[in-house]
Length: 292
Image 1 (tube, rainbow, N blue to C red):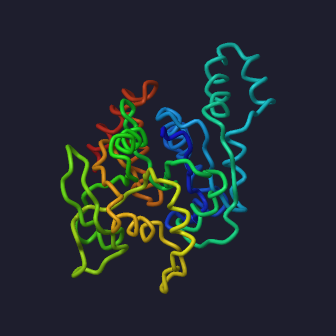
Image 2 (image 1 turned 135 degrees about the vertical axis):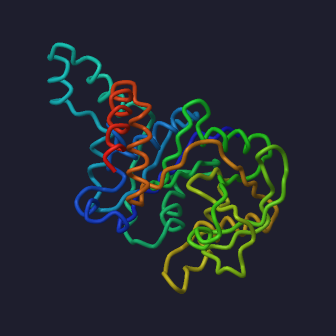
């Protein structure tokens, strides 16, 4: 079955990037000229996703507004000489896919946020994209990489990459074995392991394609005794232990938009490749480097 539905988790409080996220959702922080969440929606849409549910909270109306029509602004742009290009780019935001919104009424972790999407997903497979993780591959989007692996192997798939040992302890660790190419069998996942329980240097990052049984598993997944949050990785671990999870070492550049340095990296590197400002920004960076 083709993957045509996606969940984007965008309900986090953004504490790692305060005070910028105090009044502006961190998913609306820009990468050059587009908010981070638009990169996620564009990735999903270009991967064959037609229906997207964005999980938000009570303070993130700006995300909903961004993907709506803005008649006054659009009318103003259409009337301005040379404004047609900007009009098309603004209008396109609302037409990328069928986009829906649902609030996570309690901050209880990514697993709980995904669980709120149960009715939306129904009996279909779906993609899950984390709002903090921007992964850029214009030629072969990461969600498409996962969907293709799902079609081929008939199992849920999680996107992974290698990290240094000290960072693995901040994410999760996977017990994996080679399957084919950059796809591996995943047999176990441990969330935020201590050093003696690190299974490998692979961690699951920001993208998953899952079968609908993920919701039944999440319903019985116990919250973490330390944080009170329901971890999606705990549910994925149950799937892994049943032999039904693949790990795909994705191809693409990943930026952590929940981290101040990650935001700067994304803006700098995307700017260098931007068709309008890339050359000018590259010259600026070269001259700036001479002063440090």
